Length: 389
Image 1 (cartoon, rainbow, N blue to C red):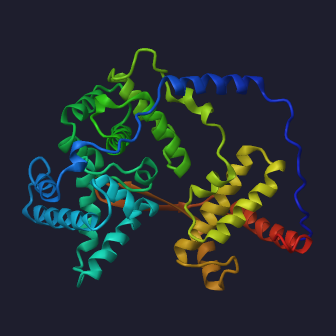
Image 2 (cartoon, rainbow, N blue to C red):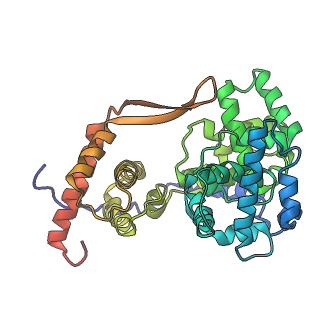
Image 3 (cartoon, rainbow, N blue to C red):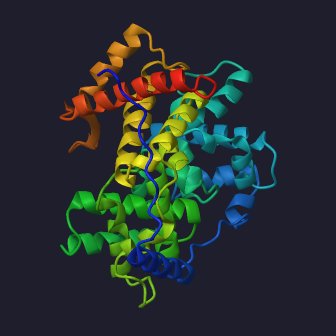
């Protein structure tokens, strides 16, 4: 590809789509009619003393049957509470917020307490496992309430079952009865919906019967921003909650009725779905997309952002942690191209183990062309406007 010219800009339409405006107004009114529960700053369990909290989280219904698991739970809960106790705040929630753990996606949050534990002396090999598994006890025990975006970056294989055992046995039993009645799709769909519902309990507190329509809308918004996958399964949980009869009679039959009010994601939000670590490269991708935005519809802009931020730079950072330049070393470039050829997804086997499945990426060539065009465009723009590019 040679002689690539700078993409021509296109003037935005001056006459808005009246139907879209009407839909956005209607859906904004729905959001005002069905607000989410606000985040609370204080509740009884988060204000309890350390020893009382530890005893509670290592007794029934938190106590597992296996002796080895009991010992690990005591270790993990004790370590987490010691770490949080070292942070400023009058409640566990305030200390959790002060820790900055939610700035780290997925399992990376445990790096902060691990560092603290290592500073206090030799770190046993099981520290990371203790912290990762037993954070679930603090969440299900309503000691801390993480934010929805952070929760959605994590894998929650046991969240629904733990919530059912610890927090709301009756509510999850009703969900199971609904699934077993054959009215709500497959067992896998039911498990995904139960995990979404458990996520709401983790972040909002309370029981299933306390979930509001607005809570569900807030979850959908968060899923959209952090790029959570799932298609129809993203919204199926709402249909199940509505079938349980916990929503007002005038609640919309589908949560998609709220979709237009949020509007399209900004360029920054499109890129930040992938939580890129190198700020200069992240900012360059944002500037590039903004330069191209006038000549693209939103679907095309979204697709390019997925390629550049998700399939390209996020994968490069995973393959070469700490990398901070678009001038990729040959070995990294080869590794990324090889990685691009396959799609990977994780599924749960019959025995409950997590299995990674790889399949060929059919549009790998198209994705590669987008990345190549990005490099060529930046090179030409740098020649035209060196001070900017």
